[in-house]
Image (tube, rainbow, N blue to C red; front, top):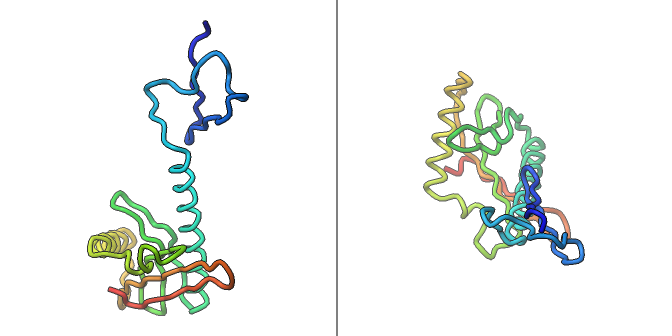
Length: 161
């Protein structure tokens, strides 16, 4: 009997779902590799795509309002800031929330006290790294609601917290 061979890809483990395509000499995975349901991976990919779409729509909206993008998806060990912008002499740290529906509340309602504390910490870290000294600092929230028909709804809340 041939040795058991799992199929591995660097970032995604792809498992063939039809018996006809499977090799007949062994299982698809080794017992040490945990297997996640395909729907979880698909949901994660879909959720990322929706989030990326929302960030593009928010950036477009903010540029149309005259803001200048300084950084997108700035990351450090503590987390990520979606957009960092300049509005005249003011610096804006912007959190973008995208929702396909209101089943779990509005996008802006998803920003709780922990998220606010984290964003403030991240902003302080960004300011320390860049040595930027703005006249004022503002935290905005942009809520993006894609519609099945018609234009996407974009709500910009200035100085949200």
